[in-house]
Length: 213
Image (tube, rainbow, N blue to C red):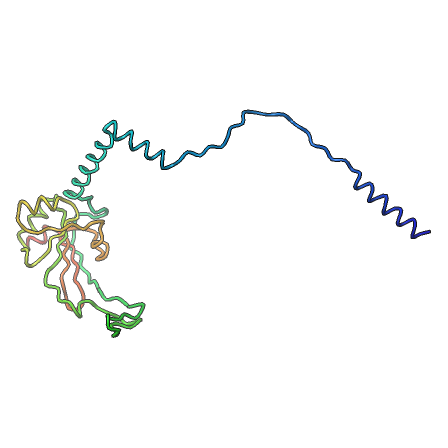
């Protein structure tokens, strides 16, 4: 009796669970419905360029780009953060580096081993000083031109127009693009001079008034 009662109870529960009705309801449309359309990106770009070319805007943009590029070549952006030297400051720069991996030549011979300290001045003789100036400062420019020849030094501008100076004075001038050299040597003010001193480089910030002495 107990077995039949339990079986009947399970059957009733099962029947009840199957008999529970489900229903779906249409709630209607709420707002506008639009089809998803993705434009062809290349077609959009092509149409834009065609429009610019037709109206002459593309040619004007090219001319403006060329003008700005030429102006930046003739007068590069000044190196940021460089001040006028108002007192002498001097220190040494060690160009040696520690190799982090073995280096071999094309024949497989070891040139340097990982962990080895290599100084470029052991292999290269530096004969010219590097003279950093703000070429828009007439005192700095005249000081550098009087003191250094094209043979004894490379004059490196942190501000100014190197191409114009080359045309006018018929000698080579350089520009510290992006402040790469001044950052490496730790230069914060100009005029500054970097010159060889044995196996290191001597870096000096020299006020023009001191340089005249």
